Image (cartoon, rainbow, N blue to C red):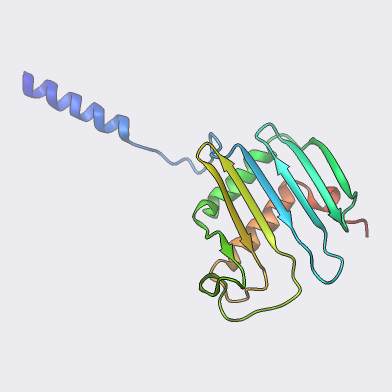
Length: 167
């Protein structure tokens, strides 16, 4: 009888430690996501947008944006969640902090010039993680994932109508 009780308790202990993956982010690991893009020699938008789990944003348009200066508002419902899922899908938390020409180990040898950098600031309960990517790192092993992150995240916060200058 005692042996059965021990086995049942052990089985319950194992079950309680099991994790499941549903493919979605039920509780965001981040409390704030900051996205920024920098300068180029042309007219690249220079801005920072900070998004919180309640889908609120603060946008600072420095130059060549639809509206230069600070603005704030609310994104479509679920935007933060969608961005968190994009970041999780591409395992952003495991990306190196510096994927630029300053770090040949992550950038590679082939370079293109005059592209705006892309920065992520991921703030969570354990602190902040910053990732800086220079898209000119043509043969970086991280190029494809970061290109997808940039494009998908832009779509999630409606870059074309919120940030990009009118054409």
